[in-house]
Image (tube, rainbow, N blue to C red; front, side, top):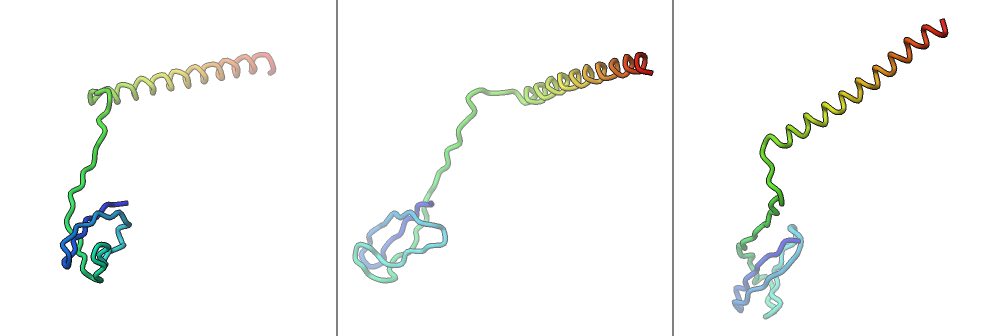
Length: 94
């Protein structure tokens, strides 16, 4: 949940409250005056975790190409085995 900062116009206290985006606090918990709170701008920060290992732009592409080559070679081998079996079957069973 987001953290909001409220200021009381009556007693001057500042409250830091965590609640959903649709909620709005209006009553001060310190002086208990109704409708005295206004939301103040707050600064937030987000921390992005940097990747542990830096990759060059083309590394991902090269990796994909190598995997694709391996897949194609495997499919080629499977088709050759299937064609060899079809040739053997056609010779012996026809």
